[in-house]
Amino acid sequence: MVIAEAASLVAPAQMPALYEQAAKAQGKHLALKVTNKLPKEDPLGAVPGIAMFVLMVAGYLGATLACSAPALRQPPFASLPSWATPSSPALSST
Image (cartoon, rainbow, N blue to C red; front, side, top):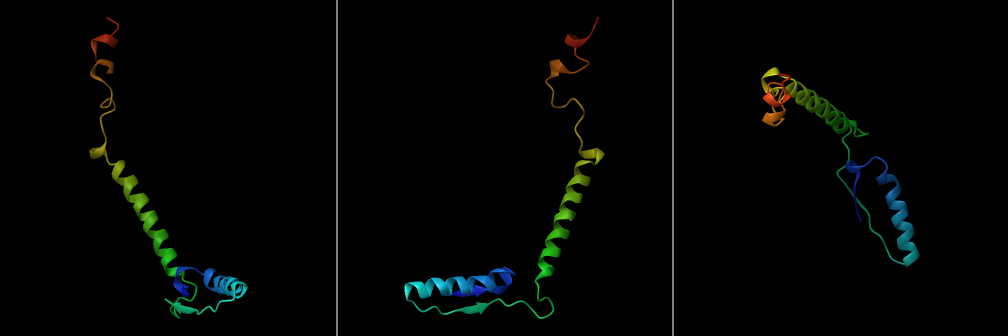
């Protein structure tokens, strides 16, 4: 069984014990190998989570600012049919 330590903080500690119990119950031998160890500078793996949060906030702000730009806005009645605009003769009171 190959365990990717960097994929999860909890799974590498719990999964080997659970799989070993299952293998013993079936009478089989289980070999474990750990790959993708976390670097010593970031033992909890917090950097990717922080980077994802920053990218999500930046994307949200970018989309919000782009949609609120006056040049990108539609005229207020652009999506209405021509007969339903306030200047159409059908809606005039005269």
